[in-house]
Image 1 (cartoon, rainbow, N blue to C red):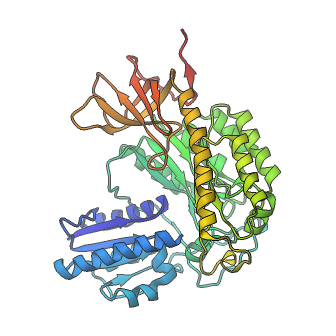
Image 2: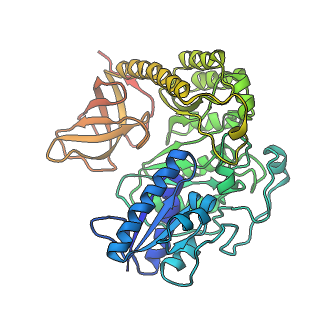
Image 3: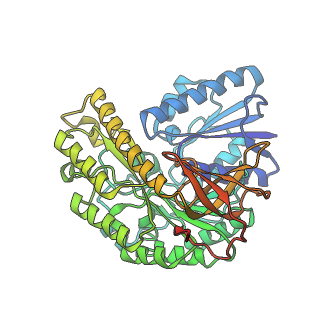
Length: 483
């Protein structure tokens, strides 16, 4: 039986689909990325329910495969965050759905795909029957006072699960926790993912070994908040310990960190970044805003000066650091002065990478019903102003890289040419720019090379591979060529 998988949304969904694919492959099924040109016997769509645009994309994908189902007889399964959040609505809207489940139901969904049992809706509340660990007192004291019902969703990884990768790219994702206990007023993720739950460190180390054995050369650490890792299971912020253990694994590879919560970027974590050469000096820290009043309305536990002090500290301790962040514009009550403070902070910190989103009113969140909602046209105008400023900052940074040498990871070759697509420490896969490389010698995906940057655009760089053997250890800093 051929199983086609569709992945929508974030990198955590990519990991979940690889778990599902691994379980199905272990049972002898053929698992592949779903292809409309060759419809599979069963298609499973992992949905995203985070923002309105993501929900509409999920519905459009369901609609498309519902049409294919009627033509080709493909069984249709819908799982993930939107299914968790709006399962009954989806069933009414799309009666073609054969089975539907929420988040974290990997083993039961695998049984449904195999045709074992019938279910139109499975609420994800430890539905696999795994024992849930209790949270430590430290976790209760540290996290915000969010309350979770006994039947709330929870994504739990209690043992090593097989993974089936759906592409051959040399980077992969290690999801170290799921769920979130923060009470940000704009965010619906806790409604869909439930309580913050760390994956045991021993399981992560085994999973990382398997990823490296499969050919992965960059491990992207992901979670809703990686800085809180281990607080619920080990009683302290254990991300630095996990990173040291990962760096001790043998082989040449990079580690990249995503989604750090700004209030828990600790000195211990910075020390690990400074000491461990396998960790690229790239941090994704979603700040959401840079004005104290806006941050308070968002219920973010850090103010403007504390945030700026943290960013200044990072710039001082890690001079070659690439910083990525995301901002929300048009949050309820955002005044002109508050927006200007955001622009001023951007000019000071000069983020190398930045994304911005107009505020989305998410049902079930406190911000949905806040007074002083901002008109859409104002949100879009402010978004455009931020991106105009950021494009200037990004271009100036890129231009400064011309003449430097950068360590790059080769992703693939441009067909019928001597050009390759690669990334340096400053480019994360799929969300940032890339480095176009010219090489007289043949390269393969997963190769590490040193390149001299010869040209820059706003977000992309062009380089030529130097005629030297890659060093056995990684150097993520930028070295200006002498002479």
